[in-house]
Length: 165
Image 1 (cartoon, rainbow, N blue to C red):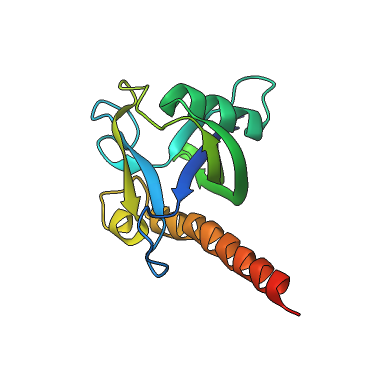
Image 2 (image 1 turned 135 degrees about the vertical axis):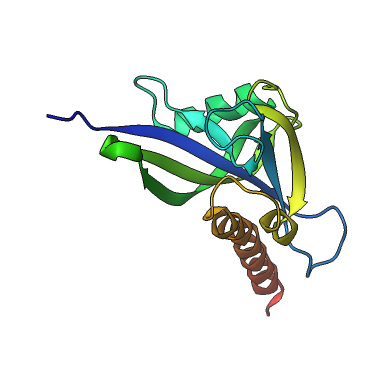
């Protein structure tokens, strides 16, 4: 009988507003360019993250991976759901728990050159035109960016409510 297993990972998209004051400008997303020698998805742009350690929750792994890879500690995040892909040969699945990280402590920088040749901020639509790790990445990046847009609309409504007589 063939043994199957799920390999559990976390993926994070750091999302922030642009530095300029253009309200119509799309948010920025942080991606890592996978090192060319990586066994899976070499030399393409991808979300940050990695595998769960034994006994770790997905949120604990999210915090650990971002500290290890880019030196930030996430302080606010939102789940973007779960992505599953079957492993070749029917030997189980990769399960990726995705998060949009909207607040963090520290300045992102590449601390894992063996995994990523670099990390960079991109406007969402510019990121969607890059060589990405998976065809689902553009949808994931747009969903992550929408968390900032939704938060902005809620903040605008709260300000308007405070101004109402």
